Length: 385
Image 1 (spheres, rainbow, N blue to C red):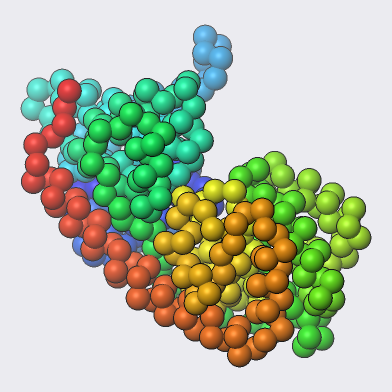
Image 2: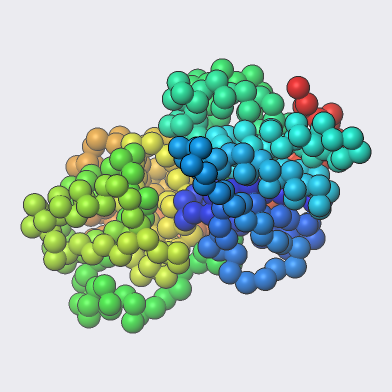
């Protein structure tokens, strides 16, 4: 198949999964065209069957802001014509499914031009934040309904979509996945010593996110404060950047934790950092899937998280990690302390978590589901309104 994958080139979950899907499809003999404003960070080396096409969005004085949607639609048209795409796979409803729909309409009105099928994958904020906003909701619902196939990364997100938007299309659940050859624990004593020093009693706790309000970064600090009262040698690594990072660091200073909290900013390679950590905190207000938690589990780092959204579909509470109500910070801290002070329990949870990832969330389990879905969509008539 010839597949065009439209995504954001970000370190966020949607960009990571879209890029990993593109690589996995290429490795399986398909021709894949990644279409994005910039090169996705995980496409660092040439790969047979995988090409990148940059979306250039010029600015004109007439427009108050760059017209990304229009330039993206134009690029999708160009790539589809040149390479005879069978499928345009849009990751995110707004703006990518909208651009794919517009591109398909343009191609359909060009005599003799092959018209690709459009598949939209919903990742979370395109529904729970952007799509549910009244400024975008009608457009988001329309573009989802006009897709030839729709997937969501969790049952929770599928249900949220039907609840938040007037969507009639059938939404198929295909969960996020990892390249399990890449996402695996790699011991690095030098890096461990860089953050934990030489004291074997030191425990490293990590939080990785984009530090948007939904991630509740100050709650990470408050949980860590509770942990430190019972595990005084523990330290916290904050990985990522975003609007609430400064607030979290200020909260750490207010609690007298500044020396025990280290902010590393945005990192393209999180596996080495996860590999030296002892615990992952994710007290989010909402998670449509929880890819960061899955990455931690693959690196044998136990996760303590909120019982929200798609996280219960990833974490088996009490077995592969621990889930608590978002506001129950005391319970999260207690679970964290139990893991950090009981080596046998820590090992049991990490082993169970790794086994769950290997069985359910590796590329070899999930990518065939996408290939099968592509085939079913191609066998149907195009949804051209």
